[in-house]
Image (cartoon, rainbow over all chains, first blue to last red; front, side):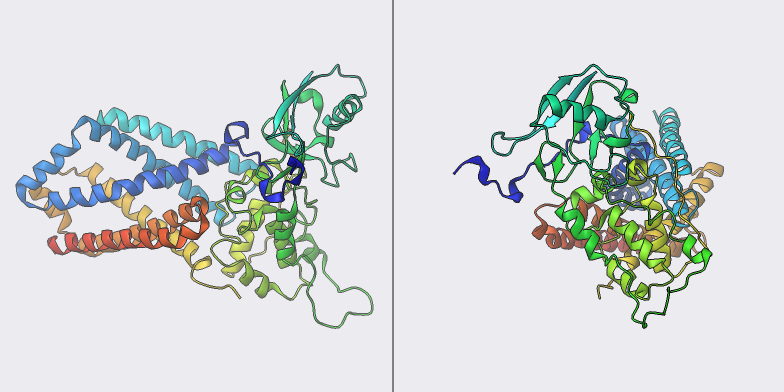
Length: 130
Length: 245
Length: 112
């Protein structure tokens, strides 16, 4: 049986993301999803910290001590970016939901705004925390 | 000018590969399609779809330097070298730059792209005011070239479940047609986890539409109509298509 | 007809919860920016404000609802093979319910 007997199911597909253009809105969207997943991983940690902080004076001290560890601080900066990007991208989405800034020109400008503002906030957070 | 074109012969190749062609541009080479047809004279085995050569049939949609576009209205001298031509992303490759459009058209048919009106037809037309007709502008112009759906990540991940931007802008065209009476059924049909709601307003579709249409905007308006916030939105905006470079 | 809880209702929950989360977060950030907390006593005092426990309870409910819709979207997009999607969704739901119960316990321990 020669290769000529290929069925549609075995046809190759071009999907190399490194070779496909990523417009600015696509970057905002990837960031939105990534930041969401990152924030989700932080929720159990948030609950743990909250719980410890309520557990007597020792618990509170332990919680604040945890927050000053270097690895935790780096995670906090990442979370700051994640929170900023997720919130700003989310606000942009909710505005376009209401037909505000949905046309391509404005949407691209707001996408640039979100991407840069979130990075700026991350840098500020790094400055404050590290 | 160097062109690197994705080749694939199912009878001979295991997978697609890039073939390089060095072409001296002539004065008559204005659009990418002009060059492709001259390459085809040199190498008749190169396969692509083409027809109207003026940007209205949608046959020669392909991925040009990463962005989808129509070869016949892409100015070849504006393109960065080497010009990398690949078939539309996410669609099964039949041969070279020709892709299988079956799934794409299945989704199009699934939104029932025809007027549904059970009233007996009037003697002449079903009347429509200019304002009502205006609402179709920015949607009816879709030529079903598939540039949008094949640049949409949500369509890549679930082409069999998500209708995709092309199908959805066509759905918009009928949902907002005052002569159509199946609006509720059309909205219900799109109201599940996949058909419309896989759309996350990434807006790749609006970026690459060679006719300057905005499927992402149309989808937002359909969502608003689902929650009954119809508003007095007129035509969908049409922007000057961003040139492929 | 396909109308069900997974299309428009899920999208609305995502948007509504987002609005509450946004307002709550802005309130919390502003509150700590204006009057930072330095000891456990101050922290408990901040938590003991009237309505805070209720606001926090709604916050966690909104957060978990928002996480559900968002993470479910991730699963619906990427999870392969398709037949395992229902199981992954059940797993996600179970995890979020666990977080909800945990948050409930924490809220009960809070000063009212």
